Every structure is written in C-alpha cells, then in structure tokens.
Image 1: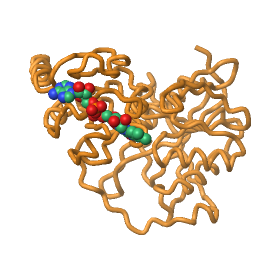
Image 2: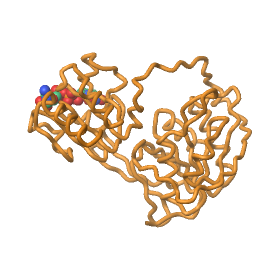
Image 3: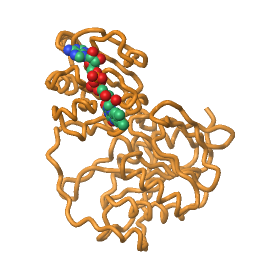
Length: 330
Ligand SMILES: Cc1cc2nc3c(=O)[nH]c(=O)nc-3n(C[C@H](O)[C@H](O)[C@H](O)COP(=O)(O)OP(=O)(O)OC[C@H]3O[C@@H](n4cnc5c(N)ncnc54)[C@H](O)[C@@H]3O)c2cc1C
C-alpha cells in the first residue's frame, strides 16, 4: 500500500476530568492508526487537556504531543480547538494532512481549521488511501445513495474520520513522545462562545452510540420493548440505537435515533431488530462493516443490504440468539 513520507497531525479527544484523570478515546486511537497507515513519516498529536495521555499516545507511535494553553477556554467549543490545531500546524509546514474525529465538534473543527489554513476539509470520511502521493477520502453522500471519493486540491487537507471506520492497532515498538506546550493567541471568533456551565447527563453506562463497535437498533418491530435490544447490546459490549418510529413513539430517547435526521453510525456490527430498512434509516447505518437484520417481512429492504438476515419474530429469535451467545461465553 502506498504511503506518504510527510508527517501527519492528529487532533485527539479524551474523556474524563482533572480529578479522575483523562482517557484517550477509541476514535482518537483509530485516527492515530489511520495516520500510521497513510504515512511513513512522523505522527504528531494535539492533546486538549493539561495531562496528556503520553503513554497511550506512545502506543500509537506519536512523536510530538502539542498541549495548547486552554486557560479559560473550553475544548468543547469547535472554534477554540480549530485555533489550537492551527497554531500546532504552524510548527511544521510539511504536514500531509490533519485528522480529526468526525463527531459534532470535529466537523466544526475541520471546517474552521480549513478556513484558517486556506485549504479544504472532508468530513464523515469512512476510508482513506494514498494514490500517486495524494490522500483520497471516501464517504457516502445524498442520504447514502452515492459513495464519493474526494481529494483536497489546495493546502493541507483536513480529514474528519467517522468513529469505528478503522480498527485501532498499536505499533510494535512504543515511541517516546516529546511534549510541546503551546501558547495560543485565541482569535475573536474562538472567544465568541463561552461555556458557562456543563453538566454530565446520567447516561446508560454504555459506550456512546457513534463510537460503539456494536450497535443494536430497535425499530417498530420491538413494539415498545427495548429489553431484548439492551440485553443483546450489553452482551456484545455495544450501544442501543433506534429508528425514528421508535423515537417518535417515545419508546426510547430521541438521542438514539439513527438515520437522516438522527446520528450516523459506522460500527463493526449493526443489528437491526424489527427494522424495515427505509432509506432515511439506511443512510445512517450503511458505513457499518457488518449488518445483521431480524425482521418478519422477507421483502423488507433491510435484507438488500444485510450481510446476514433472519426472517422471523424478534420475540422468538433474540432469546435464541442470547442463549447461543451464552453458550459461547458472551
Ligand atoms: C424526511 C424524513 C426523515 C427521516 N429520518 C429518519 C431517520 O433519521 N431515522 C429513521 O429511522 N427514520 C427516518 N425517517 C422515517 C423512515 O422513512 C421510516 O419510516 C422509519 O425508518 C421506519 O422505521 P422502522 O423500520 O422502525 O418501522 P417500519 O418501517 O414500520 O418497519 C418495522 C419492521 O418490523 C417488522 N416487524 C414488525 N413486528 C415484528 C416482529 N415482532 N419481529 C420482527 N419484525 C417485526 C415489520 O414487518 C417491518 O418490516 C424519516 C422520514 C422522513 C420522511
């Protein structure tokens, strides 16, 4: 596989807080892995917290860790992160690309950063490769009806990768990253929004839907009962999603809705339970690597895209699946 020689800069995310320590997110590890697949050169990272996870970053071959001074600035604000990434990018004018996670903030960061750099951004990317010295980025567009390949033709490309598009793989020999503190003179645009309060919602305890390696989605066919979907998700270490019908019915929180007017997911495994596979839903799941469907209608369009389909009643199929998983130690 062709690779570049120029370095790549990666904007990493973390969870946690000052008291309990920070944890590098899985999508950040995936970004660092992608960087290693695209270049033989240096991989640099920006850590948006005062205690960068240097040991973790070393496992992905990072050479330099930039730590911007975020005093009184919140990394939750896209313009702040774009500004910090812009300053980091000025340390080396040979970066072949800047990679960010394609989530709500990451897409904003990508756009703001490309404007500052005078380059271009591609967001919601699901795969990248190097062809003739250029990075090609693939994504699906127009509600999933087309797959399109982009190259950025001006300046340093900014690429936002969808979580779970790449498997995170540690390097054989951890690196010894140099930590570089950065002063950032934040612009008026970055100072234009201030986070005045921030309260963590009590979550389900499961991995975030857009970052989950496994998503179990309930549709109208679960008839208001998400117990089986939740149990299957928990057994597989995944998250629970829903179709719009299920969210409209009030069976589950709106934040779990997947599709054109919900979130897009790209897990290793998507399991649809009583989901018909309407185009408005499918556009949010088609980047999934494996699609399994359980639906009682053999003509349901979900079977056109499923890798494995079961025509049957979820109330009969899921208990059997849970039993089979238990036998295999899940
Ligand atoms: C502008 C617009 C935007 C939209 N955005 C979204 C969006 O973001 N996300 C989204 O999901 N939808 C969206 N929709 C709605 C979308 O078009 C579909 O109506 C919706 O996805 C259907 O959800 P469903 O598959 O749960 O329900 P249905 O289409 O009703 O399918 C339910 C399926 O379950 C099967 N079933 C029933 N009982 C059982 C059982 N016991 N066991 C097994 N199978 C069973 C049925 O045979 C059927 O095939 C949007 C629509 C519009 C117009």
